[in-house]
Length: 302
Image (cartoon, rainbow, N blue to C red):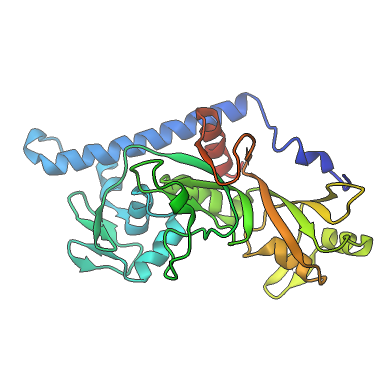
């Protein structure tokens, strides 16, 4: 394998140390406090006579939870996607359609998504799927095509959703969760979450195109760059390794199609430090506690 920093394919973000551990501890405390504060406020709203104390600052924060954040806590989608769902008129509060993502949800409000009541979840679920071909990365498909949700349907009773997207013919690592805050962090462009792909081309990648990809390619939606590029097999230069952090739609395929290559196979082998090791194609597993901690670290963009 070639190219500056090619060893990054095998040593993917190996940061260690006391600073990282302390950051993880702080992140866990913040998430726990926010979740406990929310449910405590819900309890007080349901039983106001049990407490005569005035509202606390924590209660004020909970009272002002934006609707798209509420949906994220309920495991519907990450905040940005949830905001779009609100604008599409898919959400109602107390029987009235609300199309403003910033609408404040109060304790005791009845929120429905697609006509079904939703509430913030107490149990977060994190699933790694080795996505096969011919599956759509959506919650549902109007054309009745197979979706990744069909594969994990029996995994949990919680409402989970895929983080990010892989197109129908792309395989590999896909995260599904009901942790909307984590999904927001992983999906936000500013956090530059790293992804590694194994690309199979219809013909060997020419050296001049190799160099051009490293310098950056001007596509219709702006300049696109790769972080690391390498021949996965020096004896077969149709096999390419690509590390990238861009979240642009179909970015890897478009980069090679720009130089008239046909991408015969595209497999995501790493996403935010997660790999598909020991997970067969079309199978899934729950994340370990360590993987979850590391993901929350990635989600902070450190």
